[in-house]
Amino acid sequence: MSLTRTTVYLDPKMHRAIKMRAAQMSMSVSAVITEALQLSLREDAIDLQAIKDRVSEPSRSYESVLKDLKKDGLL
View 1 (cartoon, rainbow, N blue to C red):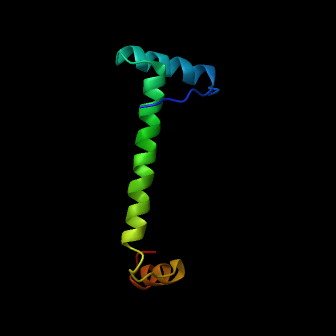
View 2: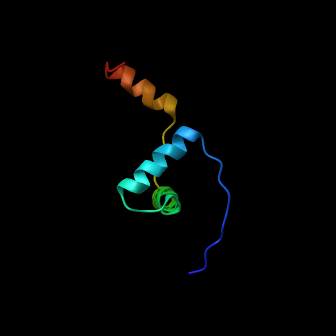
View 3: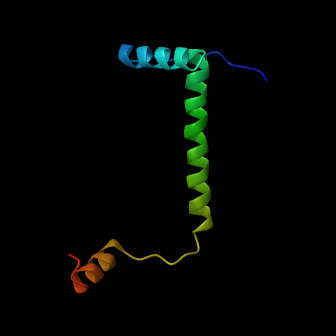
């Protein structure tokens, strides 16, 4: 696997927290950041797939949902 080097500017407190987490997990700061980015991108992919899977489902307007909640005495 080929790696690309980049520069990331972090708030000093954030950097300190990442360094502490890296030490706690016996990982490099780079590995902790990479793992966090992978997790975030994986969650995005799951969300996008869910949207794609539900595209044919019928939708309701927010207003109609509120109307039904009022009718049912929930609002």
